Amino acid sequence: MGIELVDTHCHIHEALRTASNAADGVHKVWEKDGGHDPDEMLREARKAGVQKCVCVGCSVPDSALAVEFVASRSGAW
Image (spheres, rainbow, N blue to C red):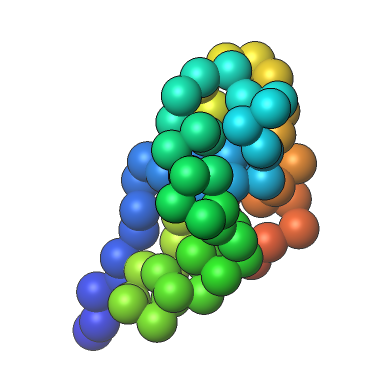
């Protein structure tokens, strides 16, 4: 029996935002770092053995973005 790894708290969906429409400084840090492709982050997580990711929103609009994001991505909740 294998172990299934689950990231129970991530904000990968927030990489879809830009600093200009972000509500806080987290997005500005991501953008300064060159931005991130959330689908690539999911692929890298799977390569590392993480089978599922639970995307957590920090506000109602952010939670709506998380729901929209996970709707079309296998293994993202």
